[in-house]
Amino acid sequence: MLQQFNLDSEAMNTCKKTRAEATSVVSSDRLSSLPPKIKGNVLSRLDVREAVRTSTLSSTWRDAWTDMPKISLRDRNFARTRFVTLVDMVLALHKGTIEEFDISGKKSYHDELARWMLMLSRRSPRSVTIKLNSGPRYKISSRLFSIGDLKFLQLENCIISLPRAFQGFKSLTYLSLNIFSSTDRDIQNLISFCPVLTDLILTSFEGINRLNIQAPKLEYLNVYGDFEDINLEAPNLKVAILYLGHQAKLYQSVPIGYDKENHVKKSLGSLSEIKTLGITGSFMKYLSKGCILTKLPVVFTRLENIYLTICFWDQRQVLTAYSLFQNAPNLKKLAVWSYASSTCDQDQARILEHTLQMKMDHLVMACVECFRGLDNEVDFVAKLLSWAPALEEVKIEWKGEADCSIVLAKLLALPRVSPRAKVIVRF
Image 1 (tube, helix red, strand yellow):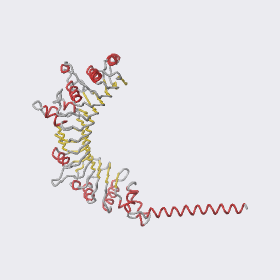
Image 2: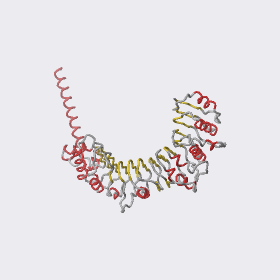
Image 3: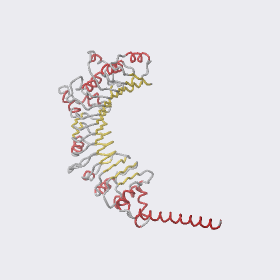
Image 4: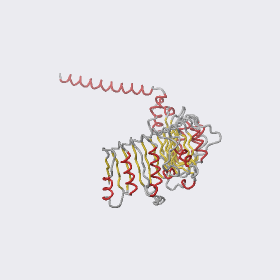
């Protein structure tokens, strides 16, 4: 009986093993028999090099990678010549439409990029990302601007020069340009010729003096760079982050004394739908030329979040901030970064001698970063506490070098209109 039991057990194990192998074969056959499009989608989740290697599995996988809708190429530890060969092969042998093309590298490919753009343009991609960060900036081939179906474009370390025949990207919704050079006219045309653009990022640029952004569908804007003037026409903008380099001389180069209202109108006048506004770097200095306790050309009824960088030594910037608060009746959250600058004028204290009366009925939370204990900073916190009946918390991040005990005593003694308001100082 024991011998019979062992035989039966061995037979059962053999059957299980055979059944598992059969299931594996069936599964393998099912995978191999998938339509080319589905195989391409599966392989798109692999590194391109690994996807190409599947061509050695069997005859059914030989050309499967040529239907990959997403191509992502990284040079990483590749020798330069091997990476160039890989990119050339992928673009030359790919059979269908490349929906997403993403290439990045730390080596120089200046001699190859124009060829790759020509090959890529024949595949009608919907999304293109190029981040080749070695050496001088790459001039983007005119072939890229002939791809009419683009919806997503991200370029880095490049020169943007539009061809005369450029007809625009009629389907482009996302445009990101980082570390680039261009001209006022080319950037203006590039943006305005994208009628459905919703997201725009322009960072670390050169050659642009007057930034003109006309984008009726734009919802998100992030500008980080040096420029002399800005004109925004974006009536549907929901989020705007505007950074101006501290070395920029725009507030000196553009005289606006005769037309302050128009100066502010060009910068903020079209932002009636704005919900989140970030003003950093020296942009507050730029606004302060024409935005000092004046009625702005628009009331930001939807604005709930404001993030500001202010030199509290410069009272014009502080008053500019108050002007924004006056025109944002539904402001709920405020974050302020204080910075010291040798360009700030400490002799402007007389500007604040008159009494300010303002209401911030919906402000719930405020934060002051890099707080140094200046009298002007304390005065700013005092006004927030006296203007905001719904205020629950003011966070202060202390960065001062002086004895803070006197400043803390002043802060704790400040009267507040909200019985729930707390002042929290962190060191």
